[in-house]
Amino acid sequence: MKNIILALLLILTFGVNAFAESKRIAVVKSRQIQFYWQFLMGFKSSLKASGNNIVIDQYDLENDDSLDKIKNGGYSVVCPLGTAATKAVEKEITDKPIVFSMLMSPVASNIVAAMSPSGSRITGMSLNVDVETQFKLLKKIIPSVKTIGALYSSASAEIISQAQAKAAGFGLKLETARVDSNLQVPSALSQIAGKIDVLWLIPDSTVCSQDSLTFMISYSVEHKLPAMAFAPYLVKAGGAFCYAIDYESIGNQTAEIIVKILDGESPGNMPIAVPRKINYTLNAKSADYFGIRFSPDVIDGAAEVYR
Image 1: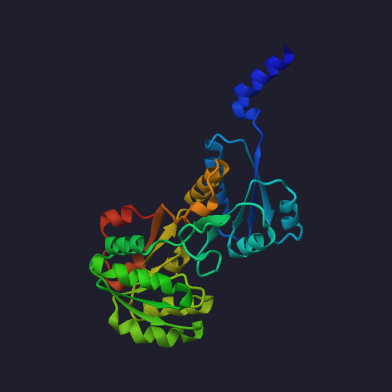
Image 2: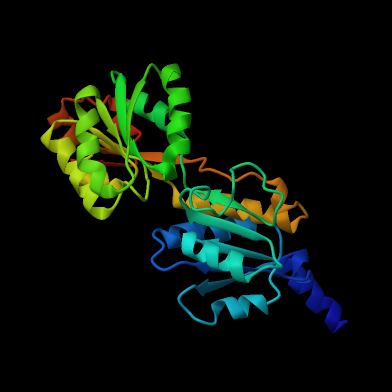
C-alpha cells in the first residue's frame, strides 16, 4: 500500500515521466561563449516543455577530462556550443548524435558540407541570418537605400552569391570587393565606398578582425557612410543599426532539434536550422549624423536604441 501511495505522489509531483528512464544530454561549451546563459534558459525551458525525462550535464571544453567523461557517460545526444567545441566533439565522440549550436558559418568552418541534410550523425543551429531577412530589415529601416557594399573572402563567398541573387528583388544593387587578408580591408573598402549608400558588414573571420572592424566603423563615420552591422557593440561604436539574434530563442530551437532526435528522427535527415527570431538595434545619434530618419514604428520595434 505504501508503495502505491508513493507512486501516486511521484506521478502527481513529477508526472508519468517519474518512472521513465531519463535521457541524458551533454552540453559542451567552448571558451568564452557569449550569451551562454540566455541560450541555456531557452534550451532548458524547451526540453522541460517536451515532456521527456531529460537530464542535462554541462561541460567546459577547457577541462581536460570533459570529452572522456562524455564518452563514458551514456549520453543520448551531445550538444557542443561554438566552433572549437563542435570540432573537438565531432573528432572524439564518434558513436553519438551531435547537435551543434552557437556558431557562425558551419559550412565555412567545415563542420558540415552544406546547410541541407547531411545523411550523417550531425546537425544543428547556425547563427547565420539569411540574406533575405537582412535585406528586408535594411529596407524597413532605411527604405531609400539603393546600393550596398560588402567586403568578403572565400569564407563568405556563398553569402555574397545569395545576396547577388536576392538584391534585385529588393530594389538593391550590390557592390563587393574580395580580400584574402584583413590587411587588404582598407584598400578594398576605398574601392567601393564612393559607389554605395550603406556598408554591409558580414561576419567573415578573414575580413573582420578586431582591428579591421574598428577601422571599418571609423571609416563609415568619417565618410558619413552608414554601416549595417551584425552585433550591437558595433552599433554602439557608431554603426547605424544591426540585426540582433535572440539567444534564448536559439536555445529553444536547439532543444527542439534534440527532442526530434530523441523521438527517433535521424540527424542526417534534418537541415541545419537558422534563427527564426531576429531583433534589431539602432543608433539614433549616428542616424542623425548620417542624415537618416528612423520612422516611429522602426524605433518602437527596436530591441535597443542608443542615443
